[in-house]
Length: 567
Image 1 (cartoon, rainbow, N blue to C red):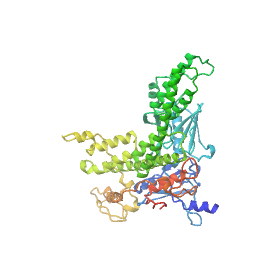
Image 2 (image 1 turned 180 degrees about the horizontal axis):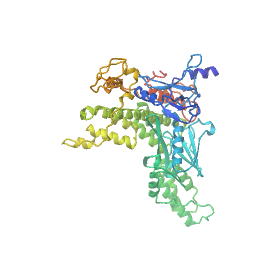
Image 3 (image 1 turned 45 degrees about the horizontal axis):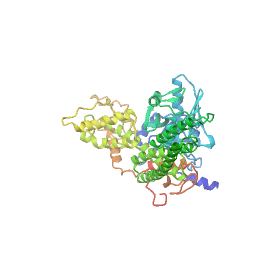
Image 4 (image 1 turned 120 degrees about the horizontal axis):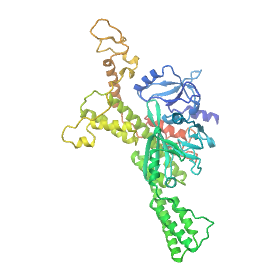
């Protein structure tokens, strides 16, 4: 048994993207840049720091080093063992999101501290949940349970606990209707860190996202600007509940019947399956009403029963469409269908339904994470282009930027403004295309000259000669101010560095189009050993390690498997 488990860990080739600084017990996380051009600057910045496979990341506590590659993503790696053999580590979560619980704790602590408040923040592990699945924040007499994955079901019936859901955690439409709104959390990559955003989701409303600094804690709980609008819009109060202590006279029975019929009609309008089922049971218990009313109630229940049967078929069809969209890699359709499924099939899911929804959520998260990295890289590349470049020369890169932004789903306000500005400069925005006269230049942020010497390692530019000061390879650049002092410069000339960067960029452009994302059930599970097309042995969906492996295969652009076997 032990040998089989050790062999499974040894074959685990997932690359480590997160670490902690200073020591194994540290709570200070960081994310390694994926591109070689960014890793040089990262190494300079952390020249005197040490990186560790943190215990709070589920790691072994060993020290890590950085690995630079130009043909695949850069990553952390363990130092080899004393015998020179590769280090064996059983850490499950290794991707960009594997340190999100540390970023959430850090952001929450700073948020409370800036308001002169204190809160207890812990990484709770009820029922043996993995560390990082649940962040428990206790403030005065209220608690926030931040669910970053689906390992634990949110608690909705405890007034002292308010769940905050990660992007992959579903919520059914009946819960949204009953609670008016729920909060979500997402983390966006910014360089070697992750930034927390809080979203408010309500029935028939898109999720509205806000910076953490715009949120507040009230007696009601966590509040965002969207919460106040939702509360103001809910002007109608729910009908009073029927109390068992009241005498059921005929007028009371008539009133009760009319209230239930109205509630049933409202529930069907918003397709609240659970509410309709419950109301049908309550209508069946009504006694003492007039014969005409009893006939009306029976007809309403019969009609609702037929409607529920139709909804079951709708639910089955939605899940089939969702699975087909995931298999085909149609990300936008997956997003749309996932929203409908979470609303209509959010409760009482079967194991198979849970598998389909989990695979869809993983697909969206993987594509969005990769697209966010592409947006950031493309924006950096565009900022380095010469000023005044003709619009037609900008368009190919700007079109790539637009496509990547669409795959992210929703950008932050700053990146949205940058994308809009580049669309205008390239003549791709609607107002610019509609004009017949020459378009006015877009207002963009002031151009900052890129620090090229931070993008190219010394070992690379020292192999070349400098076309400006004309020193040969292996020599430092000198000041070319017309004098003969030949004073050595602190940094090489840009003319010496730019060809190296241009060559790298050309290699990246010529790389083949990445294959579609790996699906969870195309890889072998490191935990339970289930092979391709076989579900994990847990009732709650695939193991987290299997999800991370699929994401890692996608990042590494590993070739897709042959039918029925992992490549």
